[in-house]
Figure 1 (cartoon, rainbow, N blue to C red):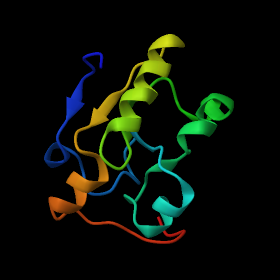
Figure 2 (figure 1 turned 135 degrees about the vertical axis):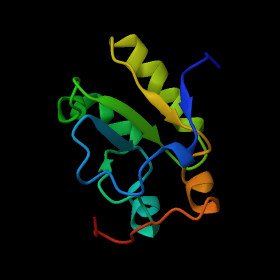
Figure 3 (figure 1 turned 90 degrees about the vertical axis):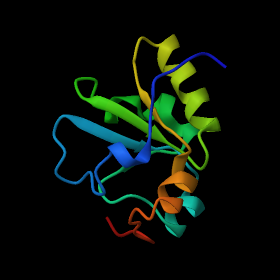
Length: 109
């Protein structure tokens, strides 16, 4: 896998709702999102990103999260191909929850 920048969950805010200079993109499937996600994250499943890329602000720092980071690497390979940059949330939601960080369920947040 290419070497993409990664950030540990401990260096991220618990809530992205009021973040104006960075965006958290959750690329997991809808059922995974419903089971628990980070407040303020933008949810676009991996397979829908190419058709919905205009929803992703190109002028903010972009953090990408999935379950364990595997899909995040694929997402950054795609972003590299289309001239975008991103940062992988190391360990994904598994690391987020293991670190005791808060999650919301269902359509909340």
